[in-house]
Image (tube, rainbow, N blue to C red; front, side):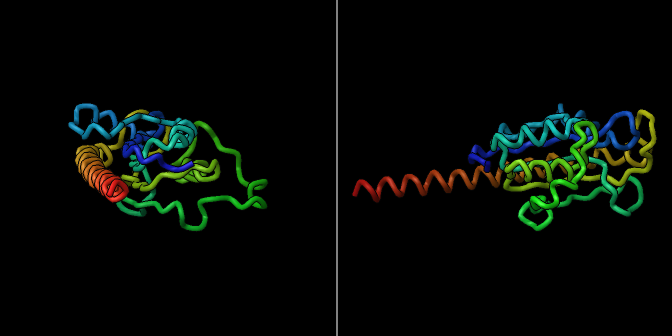
Length: 191
């Protein structure tokens, strides 16, 4: 399945609130509830429901996915990065021969890569995927973010808002171009 061109952006918070800094994505999405975002932007806390996210994306409603999660970046804790994912790159789908040896999807422990690999293997696609990630300091069983990761939340919120606004504007431009092209085809067909 592919996008139906409805031009929506999904911001998905990912993480486990019982594993310290793994809750980063969940906390950023919680802070976004007061943000002013374009009407075409949906924000959802998926927490540990990565499989749910993969299946939600199969409906093709969303052209852009912005995942927010703790990511190993090999940087100091609290470092933020925006990573663009290309699902057309080799490695995102399992060949039939590999499928038998791939680990089963864990519905409560899927990282962004696992979610996207499941989406792709189910035949789904998203036009554009960005991951806003933060280098964790603590992934032990505990509640609450470490000081460096908690200190990065406000900047991550600003980053996600900026990305969501830019992507919504880009989709507005694309849809306007499609409308103009359709109107020109009608005029040409009527002539």
